[in-house]
Image (cartoon, rainbow, N blue to C red; front, top):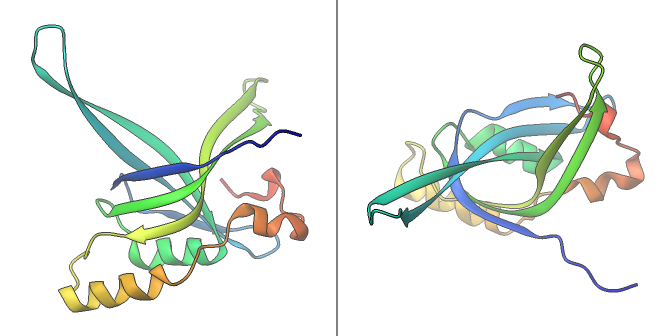
Length: 149
């Protein structure tokens, strides 16, 4: 088998407060959107900006960090892996696909109204810990159908 890589690095701003839920097994799950932007010159030489929205999902400790410290407008650097879930939509009878980044590591870059020292202490404490990823839960039997959103 040849080597493959599935790694995503994003630096962006949170679009709205994370949605928090739990799987049937009690594992905390957080879902949020992250905006990244690129600047480029169009054919007329004018600067344009294009924003891309990314769907992120985090589990267990990563979900706790997002729940406790991240809000709309927060700046984050995340590392993760790309995954696509699918399910059958009972209303329209079609298969629905959703591509997401499963968050593996989170760096909080916003102070979110805290004092500089409190924010620095928070970053230092979280930089020492890696958020658990979905692959950490493969042995627990968490399936796509258990993800509550």
